Length: 154
Image (cartoon, rainbow, N blue to C red; front, side, top):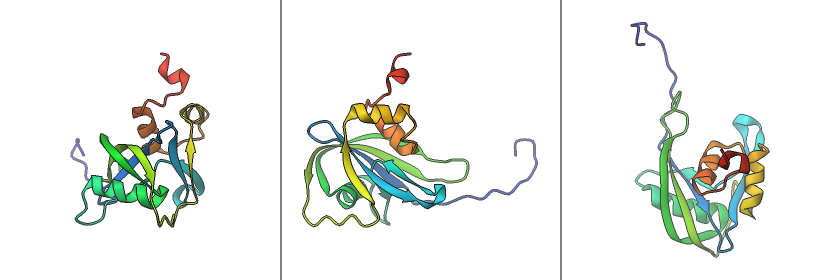
């Protein structure tokens, strides 16, 4: 520690991940619903996943979008890279916005319970009413301009 005291830390070593804000041509945003054991509940989230060995963040994002939503995207914009929980993990997420979405054949959702589009106004209401409480999803939606009125007016 800064004062010279020694302590023990537990650290989760993580290979990194990507998360995607998938925006449909009508401006709706696709979210996936997943059960998260650590918090014992289902969460609506933007699609995301762990980077495989030798995979770059954009390739991972393309793969995860396809696997979790059954879509591919024409345009990819990198929005940010951030640590998720630097108090105990080195996990770093690279966040993308995906535009020009098209359905792909052979979609098998696997671990995803549901995938559906949400109008941006509904997402703003869900954020304001604390129905969306996943950090990467909040960051992604906020960086994509989906703000509850009370957050954007001050």
